[in-house]
Length: 217
Length: 247
Image 1 (cartoon, helix red, strand yellow):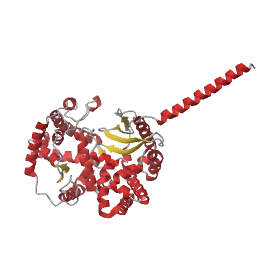
Image 2 (cartoon, rainbow over the protein chains, first blue to last red):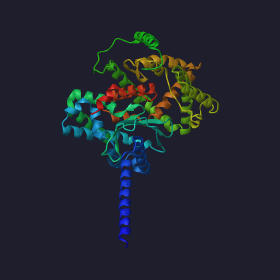
Image 3 (tube, rainbow over the protein chains, first blue to last red):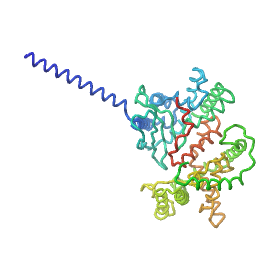
Image 4 (tube, rainbow over the protein chains, first blue to last red):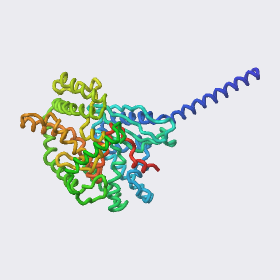
């Protein structure tokens, strides 16, 4: 073969290879830089589909729900931040061991109480409202509406940019019908900490979870 | 609250309301916890215990009975009729808040539902994209800058604030149900409305108990956040408190 021609082919190959990998990388980069509203849209419809597809989740099967939460929800949530914010200033005085326990008990509390609400899921869809944020914002509010029977339910998220997260964003607060979840826990947690310290709060949470477990299935 | 009313006018409205309210504010109880939004906590907790026991012993059993004997279709009709009645008052309050579009939509809802929905039994307005914009007089006061005042738990009626309580007499005065000339009809309508509301909440009521360490303060904080959000139509400005969760 003409050495010149073979070199040209090689050049073309290398060129195509470089171009191709550049494309792949840019696609990957784009995926990681999905906008916050696209992130919420994907995650919430994914989870809603999973719930609708599984009768045992709808009927409140706590083991199944916990698996779903761990696999689909937790990677997209900054739970340490949520807990820290619900605890308030006392969080910084807590030992790492206490912080770990607080997170575990708070998570159990949320999963258990909201598992019951899943029985209401039927034909709802999530509509993400237009995002009002600058492209380089690190923390944005994504507003959505759950539509089904009856009046639409306002459901908003505070999300933060997180490069290590699977979708590039993490949720750190949740608003149901105008009520920010994390903020709503703050004053009763502070109340408990003032009365009996951080260990006292952990004990209270554990107690509440035990009672809930007994009354549930 | 930065609304279009001139500051001076806003001050007059506020002053008048405060004057009117100071008459009904009773001697303050000794505050137990130190939440500035809830100076009457001791009394409030007592009232809310009373309400809870009333709920457990009377409202919940009645609602459960009602739910078993009443077909869903009838329940929807009952709900729609009462929604239609409250949409009338929402129309007025949307107007008082100068929300042109919401006023027009609420008014159209009432017209469409009363005429084509046969006195509101069928909600034909929602499918044609006339959505509800519920507003009461407490919200109107909030819109014009009247502050919440202390949190109050009212006997029978539950969570409120001084401002929202001040709005209640007008809400009641404007309520067509309360103006029914026949007392027995009026009382039956009241009872039916409460029962239907309680029935709609049957599934959610355990949630407050299970989700919280202290149901009282959980309910209080939720109510205060909820009203604040309603006054700003779902878009309240960020609280100063919110900065505390920044790392």
